[in-house]
Image 1 (cartoon, rainbow, N blue to C red):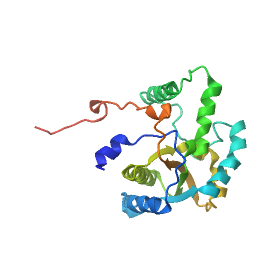
Image 2 (cartoon, rainbow, N blue to C red; image 1 turned 180 degrees about the vertical axis):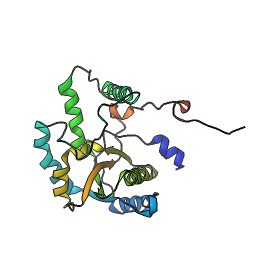
Image 3 (spheres, rainbow, N blue to C red; image 1 turned 90 degrees about the vertical axis):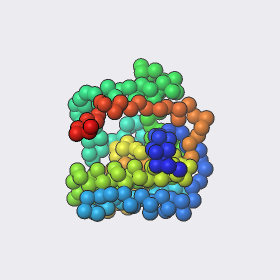
Image 4 (tube, one colour; image 1 turned 120 degrees about the vertical axis):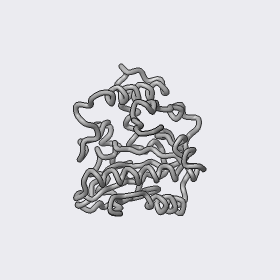
Length: 224
């Protein structure tokens, strides 16, 4: 698969099939993704990969907590700036509207929206969740390195016919995740990545999010 095809077909999958993924495949993806760039070659990422009984145990622990706190607890870092200015606020709002429209949930049906959001904490049915962490001593530049690593993971997953969903939402359950993966105190949970095979029959997987036109974000100078 070409990189362009992997990039174009990558999507945040929100309904997975339960088909297991071989450990060897996940090892291959992560090994290849480790070639992602990082300033000074720090490679500031750590990954814990859960499936089977360990994943089931984490989901079972979080499930009753989600019933009371469907949005999770407070993250250790701000997922979005507050207040969120334009055009970002409009983009985020439209993304939510488009997402819930695929499953017929109107804006005023808050309970249904919360139920769908809570599916984050089931990994949307994925058989594997990767938890990506970073050393607490790292700064903004290293967080960007981790983002490039995660993008590499997601594109390589497409090469293997897999889909993913990056989930900063898991940062709201950082205490529970930290205990499940015996996270050392010097590391912080950044996000989860659910990994599996896309359910092609799920309406929510038909969402194709908008992208700003090139001239809205890029400026070219000095070209003839």
